[in-house]
Image (cartoon, rainbow over all chains, first blue to last red; front, side):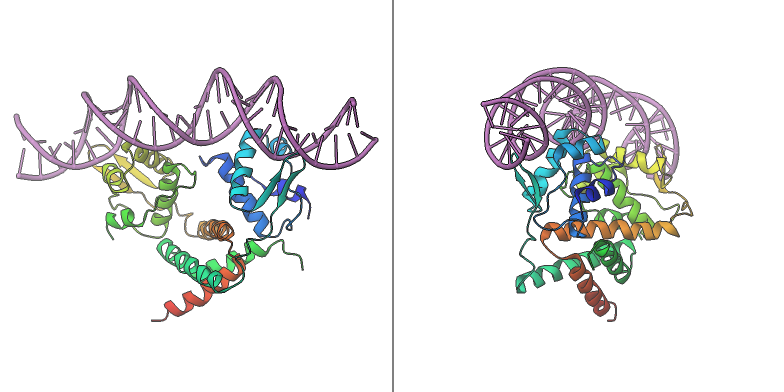
Length: 133
Length: 133
DNA sequence: TATAGTGTACTATATAATGCATACAGAGGA
DNA sequence: TCCTCTGTATGCATTATATAGTACACTATA
């Protein structure tokens, strides 16, 4: 809905994982879950830095990677905005890519002793949490 | 099951996550999945270092944390051994583990431009096929 | 006893990450 | 224009991470 949703949902932990990686992953997840729509303004780098009590450069590191991944767009003087979805969603190539990733995930799940079907359910639940009905 | 199972299943990636954290998490998962039984000998620190081409000190960092978490026991001059299961790893932790993997998969999917929900459907479909040989 | 294999413990070096402070440059509104 | 907000860019200090090399302490076995 609003940028506050992003800020309120990010939780930084002390697990040895770099802060900018945690930011990158969690924001990616939130955007995928539909917390913001393409074109919506992202929370300002300074907003994130202040809200999460993290350095501006650390936020910038995360935002830079998000832009490199095509998830957001940085505009000097204006702000950061959610990019259009990667356009790869249509076509046969996308299906092949999805299947490849699916097989990979299944292999990982089996190696971990996790039931793939259960995992799939959780993916659906976590990814669809904030989808607008 | 042998220690080689551990070595063969560990995959280190270039995602900004420290190597010792990747080792810690993946070994934890493998042990939780029953790759080795309590009392079994873990791969030697030097074995891990050589097999994965990382420094002995880095492996030690991971093993130290695994011991601190109660997952393994380090015995000087003899080796490292799988500790008794913390008893908590079987109930709730399994769900948490599934959720963690689900979140990782979602992040990966988004980075690849794949819709998580679509991916979940494909996982269900493909897993159903392969589970009935 | 002697040897090989184990975990343990340092030094040293290089790079990355983080925080803090200080700016600079472009966009947009009063 | 002036002001404020934005992203962008430094410099500096500190800590964390990773690698390399060397050595020590302990265990088990030949």
